[in-house]
Image 1 (cartoon, chains in turn yellow, green):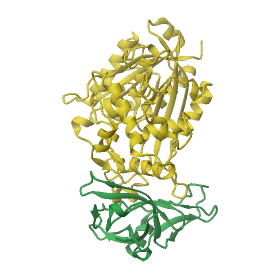
Image 2: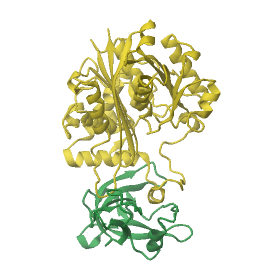
Image 3: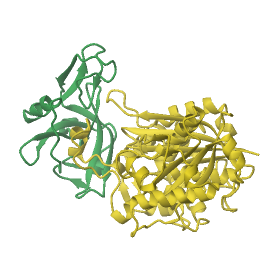
Image 4: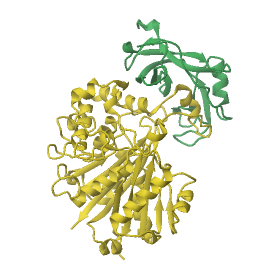
Length: 386
Length: 137
């Protein structure tokens, strides 16, 4: 049997507001969508992957709800990038002969539940809680302080960060499901209210219900399906944090996850035609682009400006579905949507207005958690096999 | 924006951190320092996160620090300033900056620890600009 593994199914739930559905129901609906996309059926699934957005202990409740009979299950949670890390875990489980068809789901309904990301509650089991909860050390300030340090250390500007949102809005206007389909300008971003200085409202992603799923399968199965084959070439993952005397708010764990992924894939950033990258905030994209190696550390502001991330305009098309900034950030976790748009691009199934020409190599990159503290990163390098 | 006073939440105490909170009630800010590798760390643990030594002591900080990073969080109710501050002992901690005009703060602004009580009486270390450094509050 071949060691190669492929993404054979991908599905993004079209909803952005799921008032009348349960979270587990959303997981089920995206599973069905991904199976339909792949041309597989329920009984083909023998591996299952989910993260903390799935209700219940690890995968237990959701496996029972779905009635899946699997020989391998994994609920690794490193925050929003978990599904991307799980593409790697699925690849390795398949190579080890532990399963053949792995389903990865991610879904939630924070918009219906009006649940603010990073809203701190008393968490006595967490070792850091006593030193963060009293200060309400919330999510937006966490990312805002990284942006402030990047500006301080490298001269990055709010205008440059705004270009990341502008690019996302250029793409979102072609996505009928995008929550924010309107084109915005740098001036619009700067004129939007400051949420947590220096980040404006339009530097922040949407809050949306929904989710998505992907299916990873071994080569023999991928070949039997009537879909373009998207090979998983390499996946890396990493976590980042500070211990106080080693603080660095301008380099993320992506540096490590990317190194691992590029090593395994045996390619370089210059080979990459399209990048899906986590965009919880504009600064998340900026740090990731530097840490992935698309430019030198500190040059991210210059790199993202002037439309360089807009498909058909710039050097590196990023998040051509509109990303979390303009389209969808289901369950406060954008990882699954990053894989799905990368698959669309590699299949040539992105919207014609944003489809990257000859897109044979793409990255789905995740960076979630508290960017100034504990965060997780995962980088998957995917390739179209003709 | 003028930020007056702190709006803190009651901290969770654990057997590992009781010493820290008892010291805070005496208006001492403690950080952790490893006796083996000599590196300081924060938040304080009984195991050194650099070398795994269990010979860690909780040391009293001078309370003098500089702002490393900060953000006025306008969505806070009321708005507040989240900050990373660098103690002069060379270890950064997460805190709030209080009793200040947010527009006058900068990375590097000299600050000092002050203690603010929460419901139940526990004192919590927070920071405020140091007037002795000619900083206009």
